[in-house]
Length: 593
Ligand code: ADP
Ligand code: MG
Image 1 (tube, rainbow, N blue to C red):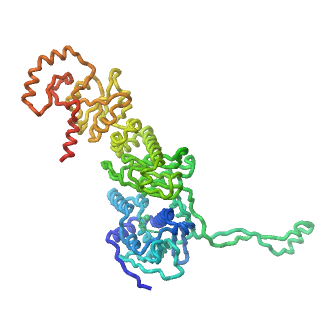
Image 2 (image 1 turned 60 degrees about the horizontal axis):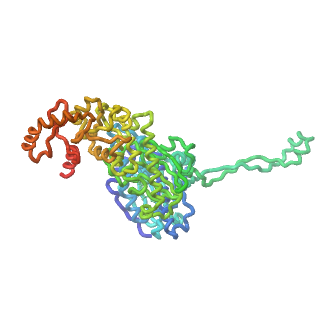
Image 3 (image 1 turned 90 degrees about the vertical axis):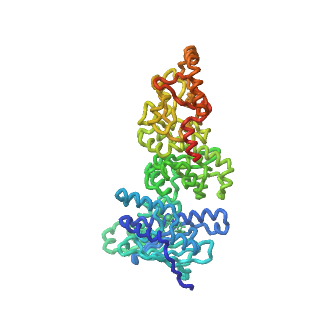
C-alpha cells in the first residue's frame, strides 16, 4: 500500500484546537454532539444527492448512525452511512477552518472572555470536528465517498501540528460508503466508553437528529426454563395432582448484545403543537441554528388546502450582524424540507422577502418535487402561496411580541429589527396594513419611550385630521425646529423621525387609519386655523419686503412667503411642497459623496 502522507494543519486549526481544549475542559461531552451533528449533515447531503442520482439512491436504504463503545479498551467508534469524504475533502475539511460555525465560536469565546468567561455558553456552540481531541489522544477517520472508488484514513493525535492520510487497506474496516470515526480515549476520558453513558448523552444531545442513531447495548430478556422436580417439594404437595403433572419452570434472564435505537426520529415540526413545550422549541432553535440565546418568539403551524406544509418560525433575539446591518440577504435562516428530506437553506427572497430575512425556521413542504431547483423555486406558484402564508405568520408572531405583557421584549425586537420593518414599508406595499401597527417612533409627547401609530391616533385632538411628523437627525434638533412652535402650542403631537430611513418609510405608507402623514416642515402646512382676510392683508402689507428678500437671496431660495405657522421665531426655511425635505437633502448629499 502507498505510505501515509503527512500534512500540517492550517495555523488557525492549531489555535482552535488549543482554544477548544482550554475552554471546554469542563464540558468534554460536547464531542459526541459534534460528531453526531457531522454524521447527520453527511446523511442529509447523501439523501439530497440520492434524489437526483439513481446510482446513489440504489443503496440508500440504511441511512443511520451507529455508536459502539468498547469499555475494556477505552475506544468509541462512530459510523455513519453518509456522504463520506474524498482524499482531497479530507485534506480540506479536517485540516483547515472554513466554517461559519467555527468562526462564531471564536467570536463568542472572545466576547465571553471579555465578559468574564462562561464555559456553559461556549458549550452550546458548534465547535466542530476538532472537539474530538477533548477526549481522544488519537483520532482515526476512515471514509469512503461515492465520488471516489477508494477509502481513505485520516489520522491525527492530540497536541500535534500534523496529521496523516493514507489509503485504507484493512479489509475488515472497508465500508461501502460513509465515515467511521474511531476515538482512542485519553486516560482521564476513558469512562466515556461506557454504553450506558453514551446512551444518555445521545438522548440528551441528539433529540433533533432526524436519522436513527443506534448504540451497541447489552440487553436481556427473561425466558422460562424447565427445572428438575425437587422431590422434597412434590412430597409436600402430595395431594395436589394438578401441580404434580405440570412441569416445573424457572425464569432466567438471557443476556446478549445488540444495536438499540436510541433517539426519537420524529422531527419536532411533525409533532402536535399542543404537545411540544416552549423549552423544546427553544432547544430545537438553538440546535438547528447553532445559537446560544433563546428566540424572542416562535410559531408552529400547519397549512392545508391549496398547499400543504408545516413550519416552525422564530424571531431571533438579536440581529446576527448587529443592528445596523440591513441587507444581510445571504442568510441560512430558513431550512427547506420536502417530505422530511432536507433540500436547502440557501435562499434569497424566495420564501421570505429580503426585509424579513432575519426570521429563522424550518419549512417542510408536501407539494414541491424532491428535486426542486432554484429555478423551480423562483417560478413556482406553490412557493408563491407558501411565501404569502409564511409572511403572514411571521407578522402574527411579531404582533404577538408587541402585544405581550413584557414590554421589554418588543423594545428588544424593535432595536434589532425595527429598520427591517421600515424597509418593509418601502418595499412591500401589499403588507402595509400588517407593518404599520408594528412601527414605533419618538414623539413630542414621548421623548423617552417610543409610541405606536395606534397610540398616536388615540391621542389625537378631536378636530385633528393628520398625523404630524418632523424628520431630523436627532431628537434634540427635531425639538428645536422652529416649525414645531405653533403646533406644540396647539397641543398637537408630532412624531420625531430621527433615523435616516424613517422619512421614506412614512412617505411610503402615506396614511394610517385614514389619517395622512404630514411633514410639518413643508410649505403648505395647514393647521386648520386660516383666517383668509387677515392673511391677505398681511401678505399685501409685506409683499415688498418679501420681494426685497428674494432679490437679496436670489437662487438660494425658491420663494419668500408670509406664513402663519410661527409664533416666536421671525422666519423659517421650509421645503417646497414637491421638493425634498431638508432631511432628505442631507441624506442624498451624504449618499452622493
Ligand atoms: P462544520 O460541521 O461546522 O462544517 P466541522 O469541524 O464539524 O465543521 O466539520 C468540518 C467538515 O468536515 C464538515 O463541514 C464536513 O465537510 C466534514 N465532515 C466532518 N465529519 C464528517 C462526516 N462524518 N462525513 C462527511 N464529512 C464530514
Ligand atoms: Mg460540525
